Length: 273
Image 1: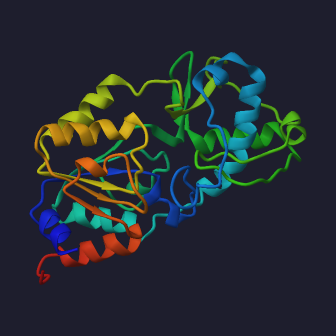
Image 2: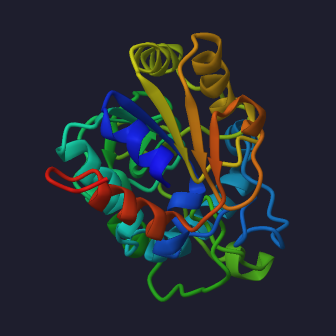
């Protein structure tokens, strides 16, 4: 822990966060301790845009899942990261999460690599609206429709075909186009300007602190690789091994909330290291 405190305490740190940071807020993950038994298949962009039935299935499941996602609150790990930023020790946060909990905890310099579930985008006119607005329209379009199921990491619920069949989807109120959550689906690319912004942020960092990411896919691992190529030290705090452990100068296998709370206290102004 002392090594972590010394590294973060000198500032200039960029955080790369993953789903493991949000599990203590009740949001499950696919690869960490809460997700190892899950076999859910995430929605792909191709399935979503190519089939009205797939869109019905997605929005029915997401409508149920949003009840939990929308009620999720920042945990002690999110609050600790926000405190590190307030103390001037972080130069930015890149999050792979779509839950908005970094911002809800008070963090300001956040790049949402995969977008955010609290927004909806029209695939025709590109108009973006608040998810809360869509949820109101979906409730009005589905009077009396009720369903419940296990919540998946992407914010949707496991529902039966019978439950999905009775659900009505709504389209863009402005142009009638297809609505999609403002997140990057599997089979869809992260916008290049957003990726470049992340690379630029990391290239200016004094250290990269990875929090709660298994680094199992290129989306996050590429930033760890870039930091290592530039000689920027990488520190990983995660429960379980990650795909970037071989590039890190320090790995800590521990609960995120407890570890980050201790880190924030140890690096606070006037704290004795």
